[in-house]
Length: 283
Ligand SMILES: C[S@@+](CC[C@H](N)C(=O)[O-])C[C@H]1O[C@@H](n2cnc3c(N)ncnc32)[C@H](O)[C@@H]1O
Image (tube, rainbow, N blue to C red; front, side):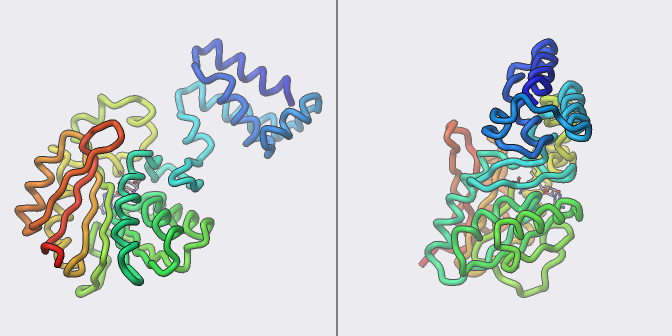
């Protein structure tokens, strides 16, 4: 086993991959179905041909520039493992800010109802549901393949019974009159023309539907602002992730749509990262 993964490590080193050793170990663990300790303990054993082929396949993909998380199909978010497919964005650590604020909102309520728009892997509502057992959530995405992952991840973390997944554009799949205490979204917010200039691991491996926010990056915010008021409970809260240069433009969109409370929050790197919006002044 040792010779096999070290051979891959050396290939990666020659290709100039900075994380050659780590990547090779992670691929060996996944291809051989072992944890780190087992890999060490079985160092001298021969690798069965099928497992060797799986390792070689991972290595070939890595050498072509595919990110490790995409190859392993798994990413940690809020301390939970999320399975990925080609239709899902890789959950990002900045988005945990949305979960933190969301927990403050639902923690103050009994039996809160949450709506997550553009759910991808389902990372936002699933993280919230694992923290409060009396909360239910609806997760919407335009991509059926993304929703498959959200369902899988919800079941895996024991919250599948409290997460409803619906396919469609933003609020379209909801019944008129449905109300939510918390609406969350990390929508696509990159300007269409900027996508070509993104890092290759994002540009070539994240789905365009998860990135493309239209010509000025704000299309999703306009669509959400136009209807959010119809589905938000009277003192409900809307939490939206934003691009770091979009705070003023997104705030204006929500103020223009009748939201009276609009606050901008920064992430740990001091970048504007989230908008908190409410229709009514809390009583
Ligand atoms: C930036 S990704 C966020 C995914 C996930 N919430 C996260 O934070 O990792 C945006 C998501 O919005 C979905 N999406 C794009 N346009 C949509 C639309 N019109 N209606 C619903 N979902 C949409 C994409 O498929 C993608 O899953």
